[in-house]
Length: 103
Image (cartoon, rainbow, N blue to C red; front, side, top):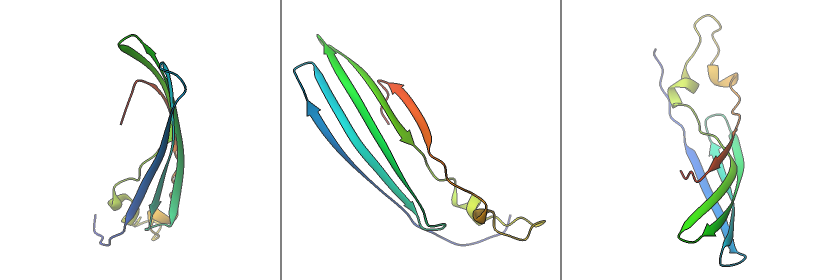
């Protein structure tokens, strides 16, 4: 594969943690990313609820998670079609449900 080019990927995150009682805590957040190569952005909400049971903690979390492919994927040109693959790719966020899993 031959090709060249560069791009930028920007991302940020904000979250808020609220303690309702000694046992119940919630966290809500928003992850944002922007891929300059194709001008696509992603807003991904995330939330969790934690319940403390003695020294243990039970956490239920849900959120949307996505990531861009390697830049070579977007810069590849199809010899048969003579158009960049990046013009045909649409980023789609993945929905993820987890319990006690952290990135």
